[in-house]
Amino acid sequence: MAHNRQWFAFKNEAGQTPELFIYDDIDDWWGVSAQSIVDQIRDTEASDINVRINCRGGMVFEGIAIYNALRLHKASIHISIEGLAASIASVIAMAGDTVTIAENAMMMIHNPYGWAQGDAEAMRKTAEVMDKIADSIAVSYTARTGKTIDEMKALMEAETWFTAKEALDIGLVDQIDEPVKAAACFDLSRFTNAPAGFGKQPEPENKQVSEKPEPEQKEPEASTDEKPEVDALAIASLCNQAGYPEKTEAFLKENLSENEVRAKLADFATIKNYCKAANKPDMATNFIKENKSADEVRNTLFDLLTENDESINNSLSPEQQGRKQTTNAIDTQAIYSKRNRA
Image 1 (cartoon, rainbow, N blue to C red):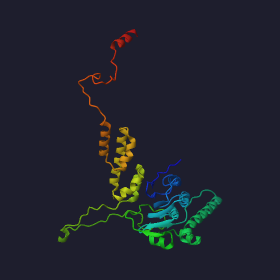
Image 2 (image 1 turned 90 degrees about the horizontal axis):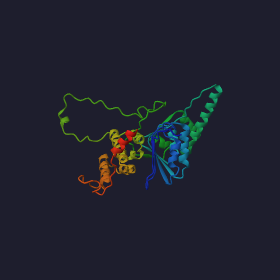
Image 3 (image 1 turned 180 degrees about the horizontal axis):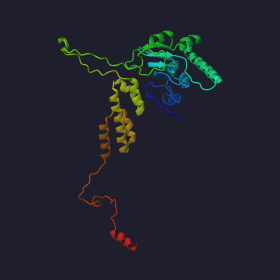
Image 4 (image 1 turned 30 degrees about the vertical axis):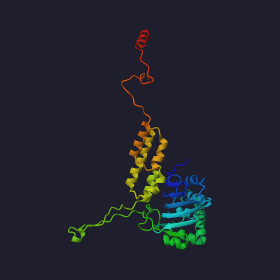
């Protein structure tokens, strides 16, 4: 039974290259599970699949299963690291036939974590398993970089963080892309060597205002109507929680703020309710796809429901209007007769 939140999206529209977004932890309960991804790509007949990653890692075996599902798919897999590919997410990235990384993104590799409980023998067995897992992870890196297993295991032991250029130099990626405006936003406190400040939202600057501004400060300034940079992860999370993961890219292109996205998603819920009330629930999908407002949908549904209505002349009886009487007259005599016999 799947319990994961499915904070990822798989877009597979006609005429477009399918896109798989991995924007959450790898976890079969609270994040992106291997089964959820396999279910999405299993029957895809496309020749190419784009995979976009912004993930701090998660469960090792779920990640290895995702890596194998992508690597063994008949389509060419194109990985794009847009914020962070850390821990097991860096292994998933190795499944790409091509791997690119944004100029301001990062990768991280390290030894797997594990827990053990029991006597000394149980501890030793757990350690042996962890060593084997580390070996299997190292192999995925050596296949792309050409480094030896010992070289990659040394980097894993040190919990190594790579900038885009460093990842390119060592061979983990094939190309550096333009920087992504929205930075990664993760709690990286569980890692030992996470770069200071990476993965955190920048704090607003405390600008001091002069009590006596200089005359030149009063001159007209250029327009400052530009919106602040959006948090792509937050937008993706909102869309996925609301059940509209396919809207993530459109909202990011429109540079909508989180509040604007919430308003849009609330409109979608209203539109679905309108369609359900009008007994036309199947129309909601098209209305949402066409970016209709709730008011436009309400007016359209009203027109549809009233276009075949006939006017009624209240001065005429139903028989005179050629209508059947909908209810029978009450037989009061029969009611009282029955009551008296009781």
